[in-house]
Image (tube, each protein chain N blue to C red):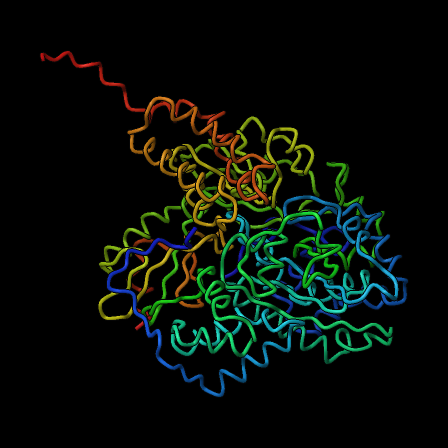
Length: 174
Length: 442
């Protein structure tokens, strides 16, 4: 199963065939990550995250560069990159909103939050706003079910979300 | 903003609340080594390294601690299956901190508020199995826990508690926090190992079990966060003390971190004797349902457990009792469904979750779950067809244990089969009436 079912708002962006220049700092960070494991392949998720931190997503060209650093085929890196829902293989907005849609938040009305966000931002799940500010995605249980509904913006978790509090929340992310 | 923890409980202390007493007594998170040490911190490790590893294993085995991740397998028995001795080669200890079972929020609290407790537990457990390396497999979304655990590990390293020649014992182990990048399936023991190796998180066929061939093909023990958090106290106070913690409420030992989510008056976490009834949890500690709402059904321990009903409230919340009632204790954090909810919508939400999170390895799971969602959606929209309920029941058998490699599909159909059992009329309401055959002319 795919992790999300995005309705692409535009053609999928690709830089396939373009050379990718990895900055030295990222390369060093990946080599440092490898040292934590008995096999370099284990650093593939770390490496993808390092690249994503720089660009907001993982460009095509980076896949083979990571493969070479870890001494594994680029296709294996791509297999990992497309499996995990927190790795983005398409450009995303400056801020990624991930709304918990699992049972406890659902019981607290997360559907209304999710619907309201789609209306406010004029996008569907998987899409990015025209101004490139927000991408909206669903996410599975965030482990704060006693304080639901819960959502994440980038790495920050927000608790006890209500439809009324959404404007104020979005204002924090320019 | 933190969870409510032990709200309303009095006399929370080390003798009665091994998991949470430090947090309750400090009144806040215990993040630094000094404070942790002033509260019996690292006493268990100092005691353990004076013992033979096999003796540490024995204490845990004798304590009858059962895995708190949901399966309830005895922790000490699991440890005893790992090869020991000088020729055992590299061995790994992995903490399953990929908490993603919907309705579960206990491991987050333990790691965010008491990071040193898990670090100490990992070192003691690592010593017991003589691990050479240990990993905390932490879900990537838990950024606060990652920061606090890393800080705790650095402090422990500086104090000589972890790293080379730990406390002069001649045994060395390093400890690393590995953060994931999503996907519920990573919580499955063998999928977690694949993910840690940098692969897609498909489960592996068992046997061989990880204790024999796990991470990089080497003997590996995978334990849940809450299971491990019990270890230091068991070492300090002993197996008999631990067994007594359940106060005769259960044949199981210890306390359990129970919790409530959904529309109860008070939600949060409570450390209570294992075997405490759901009625006590929900009504004494949670204050019951919110005004104007009644309890319709409850999930005893996550999305992958069968629904139970109000008539089951007086059952002891332990592995065997809940199993006998046709469900599983799972993680022990209940989700309460109130009478204003549409049961078909609730089940559709649950199955949507499982459909999306299937890793896609086994056909019944990959293709069956989206099919179930489609039929449930039709019933929810009042467009179900006659035979749909029987079809859903057939699917619960098609996705039963043994049809797929891991427990994802069997877990997914647990709430479905129990919802049909207890709420069949709600499903029947969504079946569109068959139009009477039209008599037309030629």
